[in-house]
Amino acid sequence: MTDPARTVLAGLDGVRADLEALYKDLHQHPELGLREHRTAGKAADALREAGYRVTEGVGGTGVVAVLANGDGPTVMARADMDALPVRERTGLPYASTVTDTDDGAEQPVMHACGHDVHVTSLVGCARLLAAGKDAWRGTFVALFQPSEEKGDGADAMIADGLTERSPRPDVVLAQHVLPLPAGYVGTRPGPFLSAADSLRVTVHGRSAHGSSPQNAVDPVVMAAMIVVRLQTIVSRELAATTPAVVTVGSIHAGASPNVIPDSAVIQLNVRTYDETTRARVLRAVERIVRAECQASGAPKEPEFETVATFPPTVNDDATTRRVAEAFAAHFGDDAHTVGLHTASEDMSKIPEAFGAPFTYWAIGGIDPDRYAEAAAKGTVDQDIPVNHSPRFAPVVQPTLDTGVRALTTAALAWLGA
Ligand code: ZN
Ligand code: ZN
Image (cartoon, rainbow, N blue to C red; front, side, top):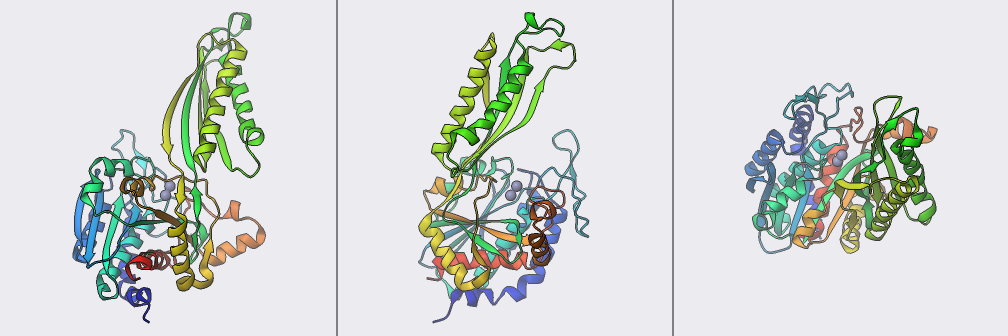
């Protein structure tokens, strides 16, 4: 029996140079969330040329490209397109020097999260599936999503009628390049990426002269106690086997050494992997803040505001097993089970909108020799640049080949069956 993945991927040698050029071009021209006009245009052009029916402008800059190829399952693969406000320091010949002034202040822009790898890999997979149509049956949908980093791109596409503008998928697939050795593919059944909740908490005191604390309720002390006490949620309220993170990333109060201010603002970020833990940690945050305010005699209740929220990314078991088996057959020793990650994604909202199962996997992007050297020294955390770092620079190969092969192999686990 012929292996459809092998047949379709035989075309990879013929498109590799094109894909590498596209990748370097996208890397050099990064665009912030919901402004991915050039990127979306490149993806749409490539897919139209390959014979896809392309809908542009879904939720701003989103692209949905459909290739119907007879009776069979419908597989959707999703790539995110946006870059980050980071000044690139990779030193690559195709490094970005782009800045964006649309928000008022000029900010640098960089593909520091590898979404250029995702777009290029999906273009590659889509082209190969079109060229190798005889090897499979069904419908393939390539979806290019805006604004993952801000967490509003999937919502924007759904609000703009995504479920009416695309055939309903039987399965949704997505991948992310991570600081792992290039060539590596890693699946994970169940929870993979954390939920993220960012909160802004305002606590109220009573202002007074710095010399007269007896006239004040000091919100600086209140905030300090809160920050310390919040550390006990993960260490004292959750089981050692339940992963979670509570980080206070910002704390602001007052402006002068001899004035006790009347309020303090604490911004914190919570990462959890299931809804029960998520609810429990958020309840604990609120309980601690209220109790510390009460302990200080605050004249007014604290205020809580959710600034950003991402759902957990929980892979469907059966879908993941099917992809893992396909990867094992195709990648051999390079196919792994990947650990939990404390990053977050809005990708799961898309399959959820369709009521479809999904799986999301990792591919490596770090030069394997460099990674092995750091691993041998025990300095991976210090020496290997991670996503969002100004030095995050996936090696072009075998990263792109792996991204194309992984998407194609996974899609054909349904389309070629
Ligand atoms: Zn990112
Ligand atoms: Zn990302």
